[in-house]
Length: 81
Image 1: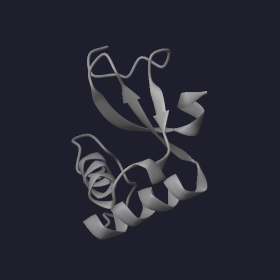
Image 2: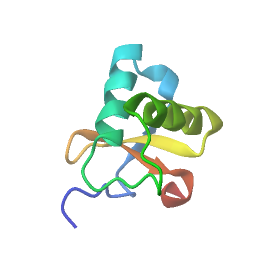
Image 3: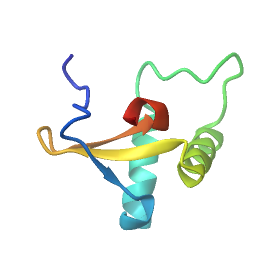
Image 4: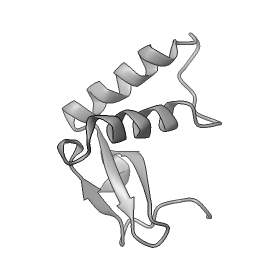
């Protein structure tokens, strides 16, 4: 499917390797992406970003780089295994 990361060629990037600005931009792009569902209660942008940052810190969400599309994405740990 177009836009999906090929798990075989994707490279996991530790969040510490990104600059604070790059990490913030990646998280913000992810939480504002069309089709992202956060449940019944609508959260503020800051709440969504904080939730994703906590998931990254706990290792529940991974940052992956796809060299074919030269793009980064956030995926759940289960999807990356």
